[in-house]
Every structure is written in structure tokens, then in C-alpha cells.
Amino acid sequence: MLLSITGSLVGRVLLSLGIAVVTYGGVDVTLTWLKGQAVAAFSGLPAEMVALMAYMKIGSCISMIFSAIVVRQTLNGISSGSFKKWVLK
Image 1 (spheres, one colour):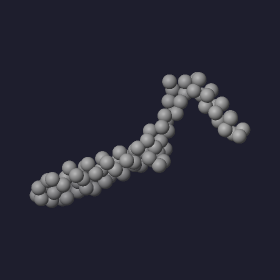
Image 2 (tube, rainbow, N blue to C red):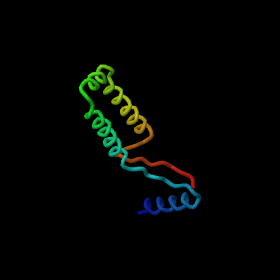
Image 3 (cartoon, helix red, strand yellow):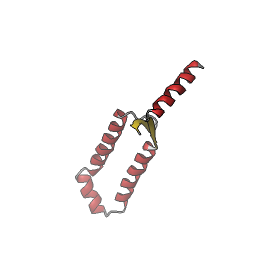
Image 4 (cartoon, rainbow, N blue to C red):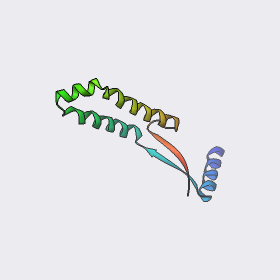
């Protein structure tokens, strides 16, 4: 009980000072959609183009890019598809 009252009081003080926390959600859903769109864009290509892209390791490049995005988001504190960021109003 005391902890919830103290947390509420601290939150109100920070809000009155113009400091807030913004929560961004849906990051994992967006990444899954984006990766699906990238794969779908390649499905309509002719066989020669797919063979050339396989030779150039385009799939590995896409995987590296998405892995780098996920690592950066993990370092920024994303957990369960959302992250919180302190902002000044």
C-alpha cells in the first residue's frame, strides 16, 4: 500500500516537472511484418534473378540487417515488443 502511494506521488511530481515516460509498442509485430514483406517481394522474381541473389548471398544480408536491428533494440531496453523512453515536455 505504501509503495503504491509513494510510486503515484513520485509519478505526479515528475509529471509536474515535465518529465514523462513514453511507451512504444508493437515493435516485434512490425519487424515480423517487414521481414515478411521483404520475402514476399522476392517471390515474384524470375528464377535467374533468384539464382543471382542466392549467389550474392542477399538472404544473409537481410538476416544480418534484421539481426542488427534486434540487437540495437535489445540494447535500448526493448522487452516483450515494447520499450519505454524518458522524455522532457
